[in-house]
Amino acid sequence: MKIDLTETTASKINKALVEGRRAVGTPAIGMVLTLVIVTDEENAYDALKAANEASREHPSRTLVVIKRVSRSPRDRAKARLDAEVRVGTEAGTGETVVLRLYGEAIDHAQSVVLPLLLPDAPVVVWWAVNAPLDPAKDPLGALAQRRVTDAYASERPVQELSARAETYTPGDTDLSWTRITPWRSMLAAALDQGPCTVTSAEVEGEEFNPSCELLAMWLASRLNVPVSRKVSGGPGLTAVRMQSSGGPIVLDRPEASLATLSMPGQPDRSVALKRRETAELLAEELRRLDPDDIYAAALKFGVERLGDGSGDQPSGGGNAGPADTKGTTAEGEPAASAHGNPARSASSGKKAPAKKAATK
Image (cartoon, rainbow, N blue to C red):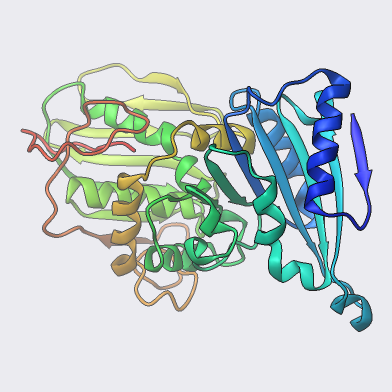
């Protein structure tokens, strides 16, 4: 069921939600959170589609905030709110409100969103495009327990990571970090196969891909070894190579779905390592709403590694060609064990006999 409201208010939208639920017989008690999506008109369809798919795992009230800037100076000064209320099959397993803000209402989006939040439920804000430099201080971000950005959607992804590190607040996360969860899980599991000491590592991937940078920073911060970045044609991450006391450990993905894991003394194994859709990434981030300390540690290590962030350059600066590598090390940080939840575990703080990678 879809209800269109023109020049409306938050109270009228709430009334339309109640009427819509009664019409389709859908109660609101099954929703677990409020997801606020900040996007533009061009990307609204894809963002809403991803949110609807993620709602199958996390039933939620989805509020899509679209800021419409009018070309006319007269219309630009006039505050106006249009809304589209969707319930039932039109809104996945929850309910959706598409908010289009005009004029002065653009500067007060939090005042429009606040009355529409589910009571006593967590709030997650996702900037599909054009995320603020400091999400926690953004008026909408201040309403949320979890703030999701995507450095890959920005024009200068590596510089965006440097800005994220400077303004990090517990609760911040980025989909570029979520994309490497399978890689981190696989590498941690490989190091758990037997005692070994990693002496160096290399991450291979696209030149300005923030996920490649984050994976290199994670390895350097957790293993306390030199990590180099090698540029490839992609797509995305293509390989990770680690030199250990037992021999080389290689996770190579020349294509987008299947990777090969090579370990000393063991036959090569084919492992599934596909590139995931936005809906899967969003669903993963909604599973836990507590601060991600491992992401914070990797991100803060990147401030020094990326230098002053004056340009989108590969790790260590310079214009790297396909065969160029740039080294980096983490100093003074202990190695962490890979035992525990490979998808989301934090470091326990205990020293391990071998240097292993800790997963998120």
